[in-house]
Length: 633
Image 1: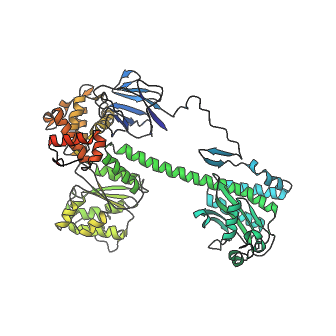
Image 2: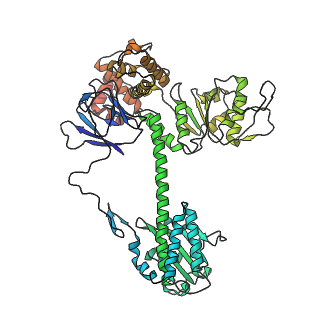
Image 3: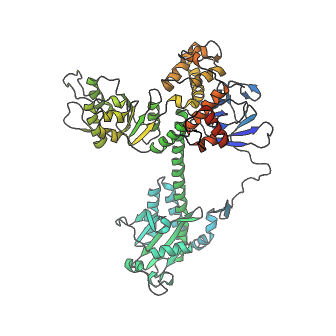
């Protein structure tokens, strides 16, 4: 794990902040509070620089057209590949990129744990097991060559299979052969022992495991191996010290032996054997053998659960990294959308993505697919507005061979069938003709398609993601879009804001496109000029991110120097970017903050960092809505 340590130049002994970063995550640095590394210093630009993850596995620093430059190891740098230990200077701050945090001065190394000891770590006691902690059981077995042979054979079984269930099943069957109980099972405790989840059992004919809750409760109380020669007469199990419990009588249990399975200092499961045929079936030697086997079984289960936990965490982390690396943003609205995407990615829920042209609807659809269980399966995109109406049905649903009006000698698969097992992305779904809306509704409801000319339907296993830049509710109201189809599509709705509503993302997006396109065109372009990045941030970009990317690509191609300036951009109102008075800037900023907080003045105060009275006075002075003479914050 990598870290950025943030120091003030006047105090390089202790960092002001420590920020953990992960590979492939874009990290924004600047004065604006939306940045990942927030540096509240007037000498730092609002969005000063960014770290991108290089394809070769390195961090790549890109200056984002800052006013006061960025320095790496004392040298002014517009971009640089960083190594661990490099020092980045921005304004009054020094940032250090480190592989891992250093131990504090005088801090001792981690203690060497001794097997079998109880170690207290942050108030949690963890027991570290080893075979030496079972010396008592080994002492019982060492004089019995047959028992030691059984232990050896059982240990081999636990290591012969990488599949947990298979290994446990072999163990219970071998124990059944050795000890001859009526039943044996290995199970995990659920709800603090109120129920059990069986992992292996024998005989297999029993569909449900049978056991005595009274015996199980006693095992959990004693927290050690338990054996009973005659369960119904055993004083430990009697109700009120007199009556044998019903579970023992109902199951006619005579002999019982069970061992707790434990790790991390807690009992997590049980190895259980009983017999209704013979009293005194189990001996002390058997219990010692079971205790040692229980230790092996505990280790097996713990290792398997830990592996699954790590694997699940790895998948989750990779998903998050992939999303953050693909969708470049610092604005809270977009970060909230990414959180929703992360939560719904593993479901098969239908998603409707709305937003203006160029806001990245197709990109978000791909992110959902790539972070779902359908990753690696087809992702098929269909632009419903780009295909002529007379071809759209065959393009989407397929057509049989030699169908009238077509010249195909072989059947043609449609997009839905090609996407089988994966995801189909229906872009501009609002343009879908009314007659095909009914067929799409049938796909959503029945997961089947009807190719043109085919007598039978074809089953498909797909996830459907739709996108539109239109108001589908209005189209439903006007009768142009089916209400039932809209309801099925709109299970999860994501609205992507236009770039003009998330202008804080423009410097980071510009830096990202410069970083990528510079490599593509092999141009030695260092940075944007400061006035250029300010002008790009002020422009409204009516065609959104797509227009920004195209404009930067054009500028890179035309650039004949190391710095990109505004004269390389062919945007209509680049000369109309006005630098207003301080009052104009202040008024506009207060309006934007109030818009962001949806009129919540208390939240606006926190962002603006001013008093209630100051906000009230400014609101009256600038004639802002919601600030009347008799208003109070």
